[in-house]
Image (tube, rainbow, N blue to C red; front, side, top):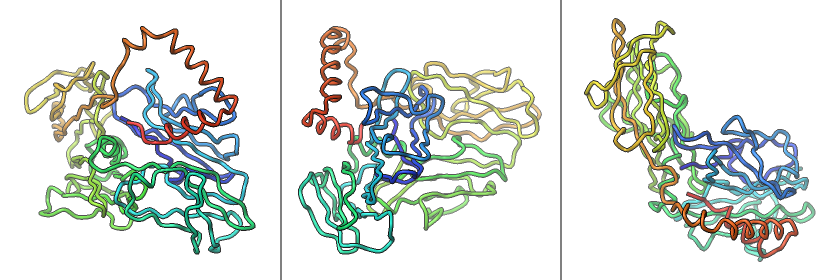
Amino acid sequence: LSLIIIYSHNRLQFFEFESVSVRCEGVSGSSTQTVWKKLKTSCFSEACNSSAPSCTVNPAFERDSGEYWCGTGEGGQRGAVNISVTAGLVILDIPATPAAEGSNLTLRCIDKTSELVHITDFYKDGVYHKIGYKSHMTLQNISKSDEGRYKCSISGKGESPESWLAVVKPQTGDWKVLMHVLLSVRPDRLQFFEYSSVSVRCGGVGGSNAWRVWRKLNTAGSPEACDTSAPSCTINPATEKHSGEYWCVTGEGGRSGAVNISVTAGLVILDIPARPVAEGSDLTLRCIDKTSELDHITDFYKDGVYLKIGYKNHLTLQKISRSDEGRYRCSISGKGESPDSRLAVVQPGDGIPLMLPLVFLAVPLLLLLVGLILFRKCKGTSLMGRHYSRENQRFIK
C-alpha cells in the first residue's frame, strides 16, 4: 500500500527550471520505498534516489519528463504518474492524485509569461472539448467518463503537454488505499512529550480541494476542525489537552482512517508508528526516556498484559502478523510508563493477486515479451505507447 505524492505542487506538468519533489507514502515497517523513474528519453528504469523515499529534481528539464513510481527491494510497483517538463510557455494544471467521483475539478491553463487570463481551448483525448474564457475549465460532478488525456492551448503562446486525469470511486478498493495514505503524522509516531511539535496532514485527492484535519480531543465533547483554512495542522507546542483522535474529512463526504495521538506530561513515551505496519516485516518499538539517552531495562505490555523485557530500551517484533495488532505501552523503573497506543497491521499489496507460480513457469515467455515491449517502446510504436501511458497513469493499488 503506497502512493506517490508530488509535494512541490499537486500537478503533473512543470515548466523547465521549476523544482519537482516526489515522495512515496506507504506503510511503516515495509521494505524501504524509493522513487523510481523511466524517462521518456530512456528505455530503462532507474532509481531517482536510492537512499531515500523521496526525490527532488531542481532544476527540472525536459529530459526529466517520464514515468515515476514507488518501488521496493522486492520489485513491487505501487503507483505511477507521468510527469511532463516543458520548455514551452504553457502548462495544464492537472492533479497528480486521482480525482474523486462526484467532486468538482478545475483545470487551469498556465501562461509562463503572464498572469493575465486568456481565452483557452481545452482538449480531451486529442479532440476539442471546450473553451475557457478565463484560462480555466471546471469539470462538475466528475464520473469515470471524464477520465482521459487533457491538454490546453492559448493563442499566440502555444499548447501544453498532454496528461492523464484518473478518477476513483469513493468506497472502492482504490479509494480505501487512498484513505490509508491520506493522513500522515510528522514525526511518524503516535506519542509525544509535552512542548514538542506535532504535524498532521491530509495528503489530498485531486478534485477534493477541501480536505481538512478534524479531531476529537479526549477532553472535548464534540469533534472540531484543527485548521479550517488548510489541509494540515501543526500543534506547537503540544500539551496533554491535544491528545485525542485525528482524521481527514472533505466536503464531498470522504473520511480517512483515524489515529489516536497521545501527548504526555510524563517522562516516558513509546515510539510506535502512526502508519499501519506491513505483514511480514520487522518493527522495532523504542521506549524513550525524556531525561536520558542511556539504555534502560524496559518492560513492554500488549493489551494490558506483560509481553517482554527489553534490555536496551527497545523490542523488535519480527515477521509481523495480524496477531501482533493491539495496544502497546512500555515502562521504565523509576521513570514511569508511557501511554498505550494501537499498532495496526495491513497486508502489503492488498488486493493485488500474487502469481509467482505462473511467473516461474513462464520465465522464457516473459523474457521474450519484455524484450518485444522494450523494442517497440524504444521505436516509439504509437499504439503500445498510448496503452502503456494510460495504464501506468492510473492509480495502482
